[in-house]
Length: 261
Ligand code: COA
Image (cartoon, rainbow, N blue to C red):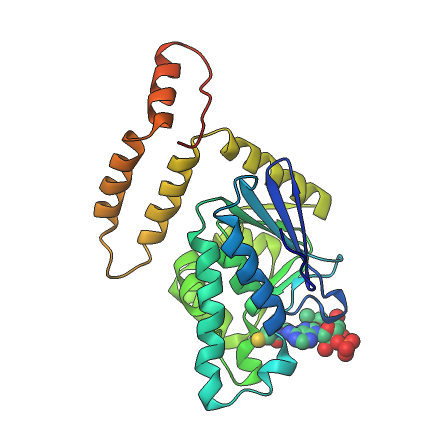
């Protein structure tokens, strides 16, 4: 994994740990950080050492307090669309990654921070985390997929309320709305929970995990027939060695050893 300036990265036992590292700016996502994120996710798919990814923010205060407002303040009509499309593209890379990506939300997840967390496959939050899409306070709207993903995740009425008021909600409310999978007291606990889930996923057939991700994502693509995607993906799984291993292991009453082939 190449060195990045704004993102710390480390691979330990198959998990790539990414820490957005702009603590003095509450880990706000500037263009340079987004570019690093793109480069990292370009590599994740092909790097066999990496089986899963955890994304968190540095320090105890913020996961990511949004896109960098000093850059937003410089936008014009011409480059604003590109600004949004660039973020959307990178977040789609995360969402479509065939390896599980979990956000450990250790504090404020606002604007682009909430959007990045929503692009991950799951979210584990600390009790003090706060979520929100406060863009209307700046005269804009979410531009990195937030209007879509928030609506899918928590439903239209609540999504409208959060995006129109700009209000923040706490971790427990976020969990009750379905925005967050689990809430833990501290960052260490949240990290341990994310690792526990990832270890479980890593014991399953990797190709099947990738197919689950594709099929779940297909629900949200309006011109894709998700049932067709499911049937095709099911057939692809049956072509794999892992399918033979999984079914044989069950019948032979032993634990399967999956190879991702
Ligand atoms: N972009 C750029 N800088 C940001 C930022 C953002 N999204 N969020 C916080 N910062 C910077 C602040 O400007 C400040 O920098 P400074 O010390 O150089 O002045 C530093 O991070 C600390 O933030 P501060 O506002 O002093 O902390 P706080 O505890 O008083 O408030 C927040 C925390 C999260 C409530 C507040 O920072 C905030 O509202 N941030 C913007 C959230 C937002 O609108 N996000 C959506 C952007 S589209």
